[in-house]
Amino acid sequence: MVYDIAIIGAGIVGSCIARELSKYRLNICMIDKADDVACGTSKANSGIIHAGYDAKPGTLMAKLNVAGTAMYAQLAQSLHFDYKNNGSLVIGFNDDDMAHIKKLYERGLENGVPGLKIIDGKELHSLEPNVSEEACGALLAQTAGIVSPYMANWAFAENAVMNGVKLFLETEVHGISKSDSSGEFFVIKTGKNDISAKCVVNAAGLYSDVISQMAGARKFKIVPRRGEYYLLDNKCAYLANHTLFQTPDKMGKGVLVTQTVDGNILSGPTAADGNDKTATETTALGQDEVFIKSGKTIPDIPRRNIINSFAGVRAIAYNQDDTPVNDFIIEEDSVVRGFINVAGICSPGLSAAPAIGLYVCELVEKSLGVKFEQNPDFIGVRRGIESFKDADDVRRAQLIENNPLYGRIICRCEMITEAEIVAAINSPIGAVDLDGVKRRTRAGMGRCQSGFCSPRVTEILSRELGIPMTDVRKSGGCSYILTGKTR
Image (cartoon, rainbow, N blue to C red; front, side, top):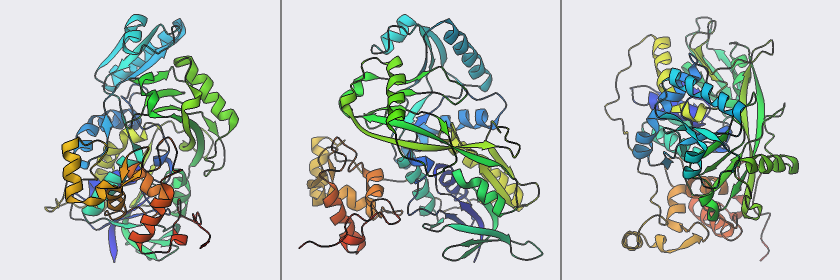
């Protein structure tokens, strides 16, 4: 079979592209080397939907950030993932900061960002009573929001699959070539089988430079920028109402403090460029840096309430001469026709992702030289998994009556039931390991960090997947939970 389009990468960007293309009568596949969607940059970031005042006017970053942010509220409702329009504040601590904030405000107006306002210290402290007394003003961006990035990623990918997109997981790409001298279609060589497609979309994140070179397309470099975070338990939700930024520097938007959609407090990231695209370890120095810098925004953050720390890696694009690209790379290659790069999607990539889907859809249509025909069977709504924790008592009783597994609490910290875990495993893109269950249901994300629920989740995975418990993994690869039986 020759697909019309093959998308390499099942992160948030690849999944948004796949869903957008699934609105048309096309044969589409999406390929990822991991055992699940959202296993790269998309699972470990701030989860911020940025307003769009930071990007340089005229860039794709600016255009697609503002457009993508405007799409999230409706998409969250249709695809059943959590989104909150909490707004953001860029906080100034001196006159230099406030001068920079004025520039951000003007840039935001040029980018078409609605709901921007510069506020003084009095108004800032009325909105955020826990912010440092040294703060003297802020830029308020009312359109900013927060989202669970991996839940959103799963929702977009699952809706694409519901609409006919074929998903190939644990399928690493090793080579890309044209079929013959006529170049009628691409042949993508993987560790499992060859996949043929008329058009290839490179949304491989940190490895998009490698994929582009495989195809003989544009040469660029992706430099991994590692950022560390810490997470406070939901007892600390009172610390911040908005997403709180300090004035940005050349390495990014700096260390933020924000609520998550699940009611925790998240702080980070650091910013350290390196060479290792898999470097997701945390360090004592990195955690100290996050804690000290976040303390400038909110003094006396209770360190004893940190329940987890993690690191994510962002894809920063450089040209071959080591000059920064300073924008998204979204283009059909000038030499390899039919090959479309979607690369260097660092912040605000999550915010821009739905709009990137629309933009790439237009590029693919132009590349294939045909007018796409609407898919009359397109399903634009995804139901998701109903939360027992968020239901009222009447609804909880109904859920248990309809499905007794809702009456069995597996994760006590987050009040996640067996019914939700079973649904996550048996969904169109089902969880196949403990981390997959965690990302879909939050089982294991509470105060004890899987200390109590992981044995039961392992047992449920074994039962639902029809595999021995010794074959259950934590996060793909060889991350087996058990080595054998003791009795």
